[in-house]
Length: 623
Image 1 (tube, rainbow, N blue to C red):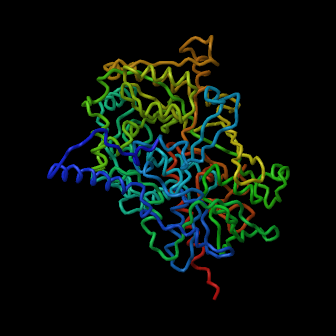
Image 2 (cartoon, rainbow, N blue to C red):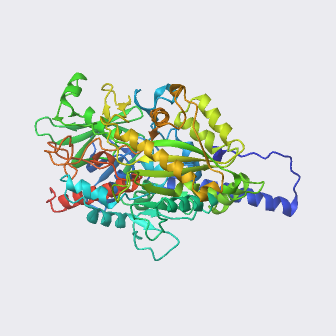
Image 3 (cartoon, one colour):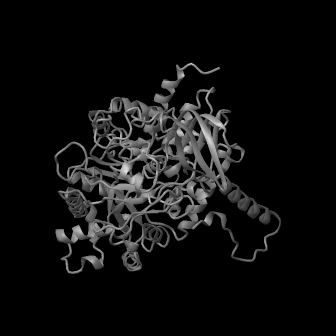
């Protein structure tokens, strides 16, 4: 749904003279305001049509997502180096720029539209028994379609990476990367936790819905403090997070890290460029070139120094395997020459998310006037203010530990609020996630007369692991995504999710939440018939049917010493046994961070850029 390009006047007008001038001035102002959204001028020009077969670059970065954009920005600081960025998608749309329309991007041309393989352990309640894995296919990658939540993760996440043998990745070092990346534009100038001179705008707003305060007060009663903007880097508690929005418009990574340096003469960006293979000499194991397709044109581009693979946790393993790096048995079965036998595509992790539905009364929301959405849109298009320039209640985050066994969280709580009779956001979410028609009708009926809130319960440290395999040698065929959800041998993930449901039940029974008559609703699930509602067995079945992705896939090119189990890259992000290729994206995470992954991917990109630049700046250039 893209209503931004549609306009109509529903009545005959007879305005004349000054009245007509005022009316047309207003229409022109609104039109001009819309034209600034989705503007290609915010990004580098497309170099794709100018690419010549055999052309050589010092560095070729595959993927212009969060990490890839940062890597290219850093490497192109050296004016002697020709840096090419290859992006499979195109320019982000105007819809992408409007924060409130984030769910409308799934299933569009800006989405890879991936599906998981069917499983008997998860996703069984969705259409065809598959979870939908949306991933960004545009400049900015998934930062162009995500929920714009900016959370670093916590100290323990990165320190554990270092404990696994990944020197240099402890939080003391990673925090410095965050500060270099960030351009904090919050309302409190005295905040010192965030950097203020980086390329990535992050901002903060106060969600003033009554339910926001009630949720935080209820969490306080259960032992979780309200964290202010000054101390929201603490690991446990409720707070309103920073977001990647600038002046009411999405601030994707490509805008900041590529767009702001688009005039560098040594930086080249090609869109709609699908990388099909990295060419690697089988004897020296040196990467020598990148093969790609732009439309019907096939190109072979030489690389002088390194290829940096930043295609994301789902596409990076596909490119590696097509290039001969992966499980020897799997590649041989597909007829692919094996360059290096590594555990590519294994160690797949994701933040599993369980949606819980709670009905409220009208006291939970600020009253709205009759104009409603019309006023919201006018305020946004004229001034970039109001609800359309935010993610509403979704900036409210809760981090808890259901076992009370650590100062670090094992569950993140996200919240999506719906007005009574929501005819826009709620139906969109239900359709793009993949609920079957009967389930959609049931949830819309619950919302018909009462506001509802989705509690999204996110499992931060899953024990389960999935894998990615190739279907065949065709780079245009999506890989096979085996999510591995809820397959850990001891069933710990499932029990932790049940505990998180019980936490929400306690939360909505607190006095602050009962002021809004909060009531949890189950759903009619054909696969769970005969189970007593609210029993542990009911919730286990519910979770196996409706738990889905938080779009945080990671770990498929695991970072670690060569002796470490399933590692693919070393701590400097070089692929074990292969020369001149590095991986810089969520693939390298040995374990997921505790929170949304975009900030961590930006940090991975900057660390990669700094390491690569340092390695090559002292190498004598050939004359």
